[in-house]
Image 1 (cartoon, rainbow, N blue to C red):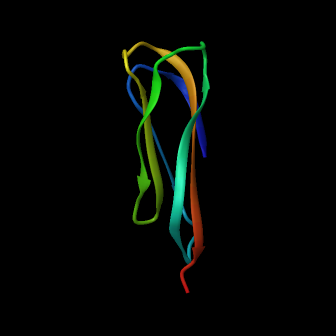
Image 2: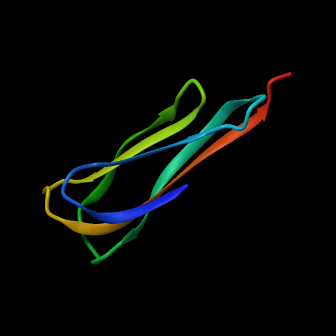
Length: 78
């Protein structure tokens, strides 16, 4: 799952595992920053009961464009 936008607050994304599977890992990355050197960073990247969640933000609160990708590694629940 990937999202992009111009935001002044944090960008939070989550992805769920398919039915019948459980999350065993995952991760997130800030994948695109509009201007080199912008202060965008991950604040959170962790499992949930059904998948993975992540949050990114700018350290200075300014408005900018960036993308973040979030992935969950899932396996059969059996």
